[in-house]
Length: 414
Ligand code: GTP
Image (cartoon, rainbow, N blue to C red):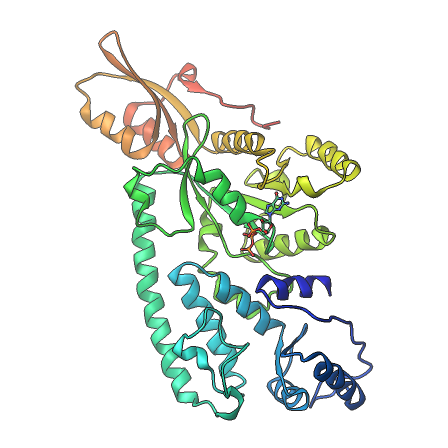
């Protein structure tokens, strides 16, 4: 219940009451029994409630009947999640995906007109709109809108593909932030990239606003990507609809799971995130080395639980305790990211003949040049390469003597 309240608050609803309603029997018409409907209705009227969120699935008919009985809007869990995603989706693709999912959901119920077709508000229209319930929706209008959205999505995806291709030409590793809604992803994103973002780097001006350049302390450049927050019990059809939005997560080099350690539900939240990641085909085990955890909001913990978690993270190779708000733990987090990326790729040193312009160009195009010095008539370079490019490097420049490879870290990392 606390989780459902948290979700409602996440879209700025003012929650005046929340309760668990035990059901002995499910009524097809109203979900709840008639006595219960009446009792809740009286409280709704007394408190002047405008919206009721039923934290489970409602059939269209149940939703309509409850709205009639209670004389207010009623939405179910899917509706609430769609509202949240609608309010949070930042990319054009994300917004289109949410709208498509919302339309498909709405089409299956066709209960009332949907004023958001005019896009008057920021959200997705379940929560308001004058006279909505009076007008019947035209199924054909929705179908046309769905068809147009699908076309728009295809075009957005093409542009996105071009962006990704452009980014892959400069092989910066991608780190995707994942985590439960309200865990602090955006705060961390801004904190990490805010001070470090290179305003001169025009390459990123055209990219998604949720992606920014993050230069690690050792010089390695990466792309940090923020994502829509996860929620519990994400309906399976929504998972499918959000696959494209989470595409960045699937292809990311590292996943950084931001956890709100001050939340009493953190264990359940963790399980939810792990499950969604598993559904996306991602190995979410902490041992994998691709998934790191930032245990956020340490500043909100009392001394005892804080010390306990600190001891725990010391034993976990891929978790860091800290606070995105205060900045605590961020140095350790960046160092961990650096170590894990170095394990995935490799850093090579090479000396080139100054006449080898093509070789130099290749290294700049495919790697991140960490150091460059002219010495003894040769150009000495230290370059970070992704695994695929390291193989190409070996083919192009001949395999390297062992001494030329710099092991950034022991294979086990910790
Ligand atoms: P979604 O966009 O819903 O996915 O949320 P998010 O994970 O991006 O969370 P966001 O960064 O918006 O933070 C949620 C709330 O937690 C905000 O009010 C932040 O100010 C607060 N917050 C984030 N990090 C910390 C922290 O380390 N300590 C404290 N005290 N508050 C934090």
